[in-house]
Image 1 (tube, rainbow, N blue to C red):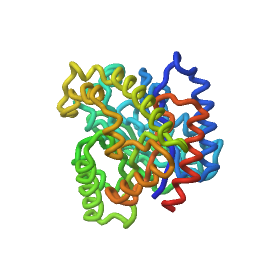
Image 2 (cartoon, helix red, strand yellow; image 1 turned 90 degrees about the vertical axis):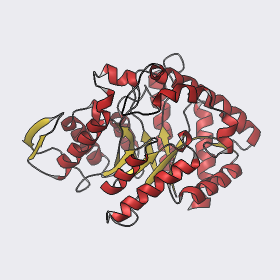
Image 3 (cartoon, helix red, strand yellow; image 1 turned 45 degrees about the vertical axis):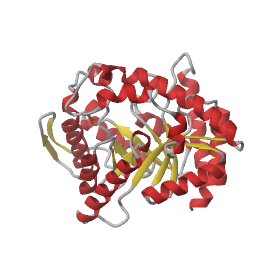
Image 4 (cartoon, helix red, strand yellow; image 1 turned 120 degrees about the vertical axis):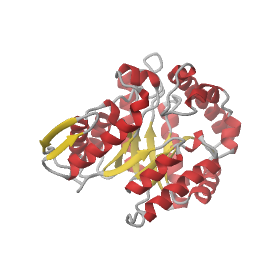
Length: 351
């Protein structure tokens, strides 16, 4: 198993100034490299405390690249619907060169109605725009004199500069939420997979992983390339009771800012997002104790977290774990404690 830190800010100016958030996050990046974590990752969101301090993963990861030499840099994920593929492919190729090939590119569809409204895009177009943008970036990285003519973009012939450091292109990962067919398509295409197990039942996650791995193998892609990233909230303390009390507090804060971000789903419907109209009620009904009992969050002592991860490995196999250590706005000192405890007392059990 591999382990990394997922930077998913859930703060705004009244909680923490942006410069302080980025300073602390980049200090945590340096610590992650020092402690032997395998990757760092960050999201793309806008406007809300729910991710809004990270509108451009490439900017943050470029700063992270300058402070590190080994750790992998992962977009988790960039949204091709919100950026022209010529711009997106170019920025990512630049980051791949700056980092000397440490980049993995996660692509996602986005799901917040307010973001689509601000970019003046129809949510019903999100899936075809996602597919179109991903394929355009892949072609721009891998080929020269590219001509593109789709429903959304028309350009070429053009040859992207800089060329990617990794050839033919960086590793591609696809973010999926609750749709099994998305996982199956990612497998057929030979991409890695980004999942958040907390939003689905264990059996549903296992179903999606089975479909993904089966499609990957049947398509004849290289063995071992079916990479799966699972994201979990994470809070550790030597004292289990302290960890649970603090973990509950930060979980509630995260849910509160998420409710604000997804509020538009109370009145919005989209064919491309079946079931999302229930998301507000689901977040409001979230039960921390149930989430903990179902191994959907990694909160507790190092010994407890080790046992939870052993169970997760039995359920899902040797996956890559992305730890959301700062979601919910714990202090920098608490976050670094979690990072150290996890690296020193949990990770060695899985190497």
